[in-house]
Amino acid sequence: MSELVTGDAVVLGLRPARLPSRALAAAIDLAVVFCVFMLVSVVVAIASVTLDEAAVAAITVALFLLVLIGGPIAVETLSHGRSLGKLACGLRVVRDDGGPIRFRHALVRGAMGAVEILMTFGVVASIASLVSARGRRLGDVFAGTLVIRERVAAKRSVGVPPPPPWLVGRFSQLDLSAVPDELWLAVRQYLTRMHQLDPGVGGSIAGRLADELVTRTGIAPPQGVPAAAFLAAVVHERQARDARRVFAGARNSSSAPPAPPAPSVLPGATGFAAPATPPAPAGPVADGSGAAGGPRPGHGTGQEGAGASSAGFAPPG
Image 1 (tube, one colour):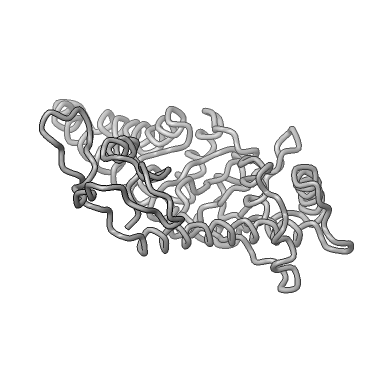
Image 2 (cartoon, rainbow, N blue to C red; image 1 turned 180 degrees about the vertical axis):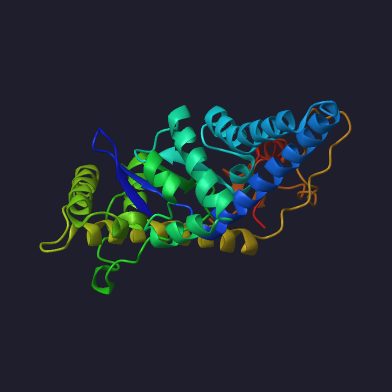
């Protein structure tokens, strides 16, 4: 990756294109340009049959300049650095500061390309691209441009690094309910990219995120624990809680008893009736305490059972 600094002191991370991709893009562009040149030459040759040799030679030179040199310049100017070959290979021509090129940049690149690509069959351009640290040919050096890669292969997702072993389980009693999702996302993004940051900048970001976590949870990290290790331990604790919650839900759903069959509906009833029970004896029934009389509390008639069933509570299995 090439670091370019803009006028606003902003560092741009650009991926310069190397010789293989640039050679393939140049080959596609040259093939298209030569096909157009041959087609236009045949049309002009048919139209200039009656002209003398000097006029034909002048027309040929004009076609060479207009098609082989002026064509790429016009295409790069109008497309802001994306010719057909560069579009196919995912490349683009930009200025040294990362901005889009203009006509003067395309003109210098096209004029130098006629020398280092067309007249030397690409030998000079290949050598210059191999020698340059950013893969630039002479046209790019004189024009102040750079060919970059726009399409970069997607990297596999990087997981959050684990905390130190002596911190695992230290925050099991920490209340994480007040931590918002935005703060969790910021902590995860920092932990996955902290090795790509400057040590000073990364330390300040870790300290700020750790202070926000302390403010939300109300518990400060142990003395001497780095901010990054504290963040990793807290994130690990949250992931462990989420995993236990998911596994417990799956285990409970798999071990739950089957639902009882739906009760039958009695004719003329307006709701669910209680399941059929054996008839009660005619005389009074004594309870466990020896008292006889009406029904005990909690043991009502069938209508009460129907009301309980219609409320949505299933009888115990």
